[in-house]
Image (cartoon, rainbow, N blue to C red; front, side):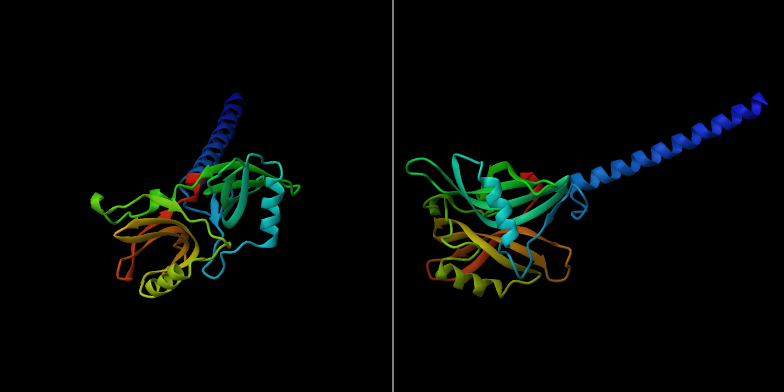
Length: 244
């Protein structure tokens, strides 16, 4: 009788151990997917919300941003585009925004602003980071230092979500028609750099032409030479998790 009871107890312990191990492995796999971004649609991962047809903000998104910034002081911030969403106990929203310090002679720059909207619909700003777009420019080109007149300057658009400069907009339309493999929808010209000609840093939504799963936020560098010829000299993928 004791022997049977011992065997039964051992079997139960083994069963519980196997179940616990299996659950632990599943949790490890889920955590790994979140950390590496392999599954952007799962809880905990950032999901790109831009599309190839629309990069503007919806009224509900503007309200969430405006409600959150009411209690934020020291910086006047204006939303430009919603880059991504993250499901938590509520939702995190990642915005590209223009930030202007509330001081004399302020300088406007681009910010990555994360807004948390809780399950009761209340919003608050949890993170404001500088968006150093220069880290993503000229990735494929080495310039002779003698050709560089100056560094990058911020080009904050007067209107939201458009290529406000007609000259840049025209150059963009011409050059993107010749691109293959990827299609891009511009969000804004975020910077300009004088070289032997001019470089423009253009933030975009990008999508692969042959694989709909390859999409996200990109920074393209548009170069226009002194004769007016245009070309895309570099493109870089922006991982939203870097700004989490």
